Image (cartoon, rainbow, N blue to C red; front, side, top):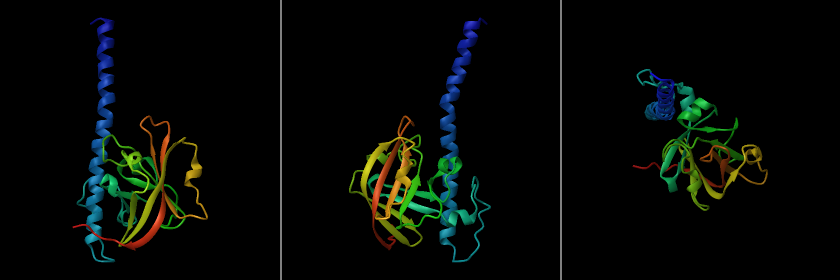
Length: 202
């Protein structure tokens, strides 16, 4: 085999690997996200204080305590409801949305949430930039729903961490994801409207 043909085969293999890796990662994170949903459903159906056996759920990387602290973010305009894990790290971000700051309280200060764009529509924050000003966003915490209304959506540099800071005159929600290029960030700001009892869809 000539060097040119050998080099060509190597480049083909490398190219296939570049294509396969994101697909594999998406497949893996989808399985783990499914396990996350199954586990949270079991916990939700259990009586208060009752221990839940999660050992039968495969691909579950979280403890029961972690899952009991998971919130839900609903964006009706995009027809999505995503889990929000309490800690931001690369692994958690591959499966769900995550809280950026510690000890946040819904409806108080600037509640911040991060999410990857995802490799396909409907995954994480893939379509976040499409939600127009004036649309409502819901943060579900147990039986309570915190209602927010979008005030702005802008592209910012990764260094613009001031969007995460609390404004003493405002209670708000800040959602952060990457642009398609990954070089900048999309920041969506929503003001807190009200807290109400959650209405469960049938």
